[in-house]
Length: 332
Image 1 (tube, rainbow, N blue to C red):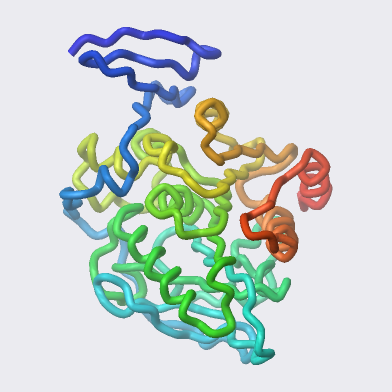
Image 2 (image 1 turned 180 degrees about the vertical axis):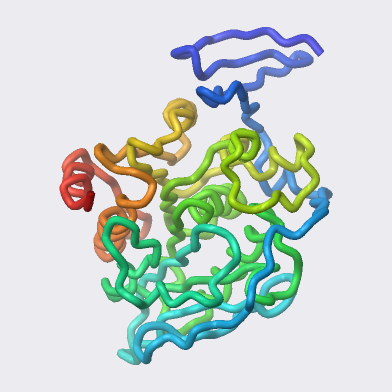
């Protein structure tokens, strides 16, 4: 196969010609990786493919804490493998339909044996997503296949996308939820799931990813994974789990936020490609922030944007003044 580089952009985003077809390539700085940007959607690329799960990443207890009254209820939603656990804020019983956020947890191992979703957390590392609940927004925190004794196997950024879509479908049926105003947000592992889910489905009104990784292979080979990789480590398996590959799949407004200390420079290249192709994706580097202390001020800012997002189509934007306000609220 003959490759020819062309259109070099800032040494980081360029095109190649492979077998007569132009392919855009994104560099992942400091890792030696390059990602070919697919012209297929993520959903199309997954058609006919079955992931090969070869080991378990973790063993969880499946023992759920009981949320205090008025915070969340522990319920189930129907996923493809079967019934999945989730925390959901209760019906306010005011006869109104409210905007909703699906908050995708970070880390690995699910929701069991953890009460941090409702116990007050330090502002320099608040992974609870509770800013949405406190703002009066319906919040759903789903657990996924292979977590918390749910049916199925944990697939790491693959089958969870079907589960997220199933969580959305369940929320649309709840009488206190406005089905036209359901958003997706998450941090770290959850942030990567958010980007992939928004590439896999265009159902969400807008998506907010905090601290995602652009290329899973670069992350794994960098030695920073907290748990064993459960799938067979082929290029196709990695590609189908890497947001940079399918950035052209994004159809709804989507943001990536990260503190400057942890920011992946590759997202500058992704955002540049998105801008040139009219893809509704923006990358935001938070000055003075790191991977954790941005969560509280960013989720609080998102919650306020959601409450004001009442037009037929989403009108959410983040101005430089908004970013300055987020920066001012960071706890060090």
